[in-house]
Length: 393
Image 1 (cartoon, helix red, strand yellow):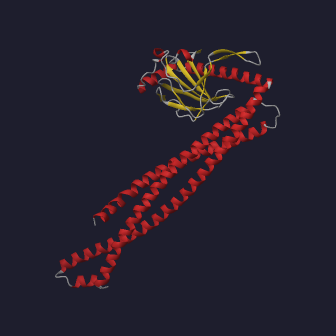
Image 2 (cartoon, rainbow, N blue to C red):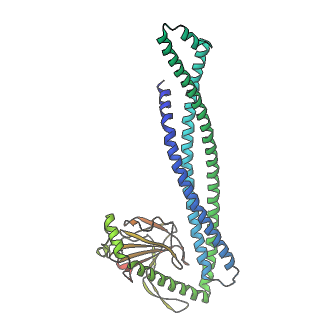
Image 3 (cartoon, helix red, strand yellow):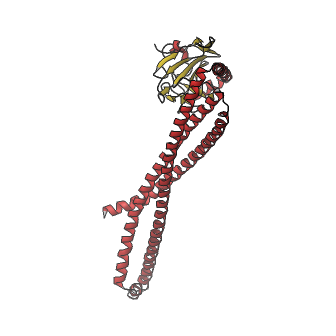
């Protein structure tokens, strides 16, 4: 009896809770599906551009940029598909739970209805008339009439509720089957995305090898790096125009450590664990004999390794720059900025605070012809400075 009562109480409470959760999950799934639709469109556009550029026999940096962007888009697609699948799997668990509890409620209600039917049969079809005729007086007859009306109404409501529960259960089972089918399609598309990414990465590696052997392509690569450095300079200069507004925002948010960057010179943790492969400053090209300036340092690390913010700050830019690939800029106050380039799987949002040690992204080879690495820069106002003087030795 206690078990039946517990099931009944749970069955009354659960549908509303589950309904709210499933509606919320449905909204999240719809929003995620819209994002995925946009990503698929961007991938198709890049496919078209890549197909056109492949007709040009001469290897160009543009082809690699397009491949880079598509690889990043495919990565976003795969990550989005995984998130959508996780939402659907949560909804599947909720649907299974509500189906199970509703089944139990249906079983209890059927059992009660059956007992009432047996009791009515034993009393005979004229039980209502008999009760009224055997009343002692008019008041008792009125009371029995009200009682019989209430009983009949309760029985009708029970049958209507039972019918409604059965229909709802069928609907939940149909939704469950639909979501299970969608999860299978998600997994299949995730697998296709992984294969497509592997193909594009091989194409990029092949083009990168060709560029390193072709003098005109090397010249083009040098121009790309110079243009990237110039674009970064412009972005920092634009950010400097809004210093006071961000300072006020950081104060209103109570962002601890913002505006204290200068205190940590030589004390900052490294943004990623890896091997330092390029220093800050001038570099002479082995084959061209030309000198270019590296505006930061380059740290080689396995693809997918976490990249962390070196200090508390505000994420002021998440962008794509040719030669840099996916790039994040963090403002630390006092006109100090850190730059994290050649990254993927970005974990932060623009105009949001970040704490030192928080994962902002992962190492990738976006914008790089030399494999996975993090390009890291430190800016003081409009001037780039050597990051090694700020990092722990």
